[in-house]
Length: 267
Image (cartoon, rainbow, N blue to C red; front, side, top):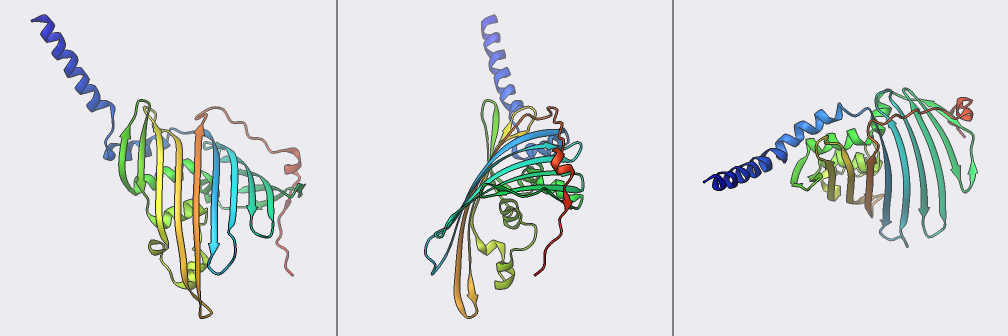
């Protein structure tokens, strides 16, 4: 009798554990937003591949980029390093960019084809930091979109998201303003974006993102100057997040402290 009771107790505990350990779609929406409030800092690595082609033109334009960032959420400071290689039928161009955002000031250091320009700085809005806070942007889009599936693994949840298309475009393309071609051709994001896929890996317990993969296929087509126009865009971005809430002491390089305010040159 005692053995039977022990077996039943173990079985009941296992069922109860499964029911309480894994979150539902509704629960994870609420808990992800709460988890954002517990993030004071983090780091990430990013890789991107974008391929663009226009009908009637030979070849494709390809952009490959990689980068890493150090994000101090608490003090609204960020450091971003980006390597970008632009490849088309004419040539390839390699650029390196170093960016610091401290509250409402952005510092920029650009290297093109091996030559570094002088540091410049800009005054930016208080929203600029939020626009560079990838974790917050991705989580907010995920909870506002349709969660197609939620899979619970040993140490993480995998969320497959069907994102709202306009917000997804802005996230992937890093464009807050409406794309000029969409405006010119009077197109809607719902029609332009043919495929939008978003997968996020969330660590169990603390519910912080550890990986995010974004894939988009878009076709912009219509008539320009009474001629048919068709542009195809394929993009894939991968983010890997780490070192949450570890101390990040971001300091400006000495040369950046001497940066001049950027002034656009007019011909």
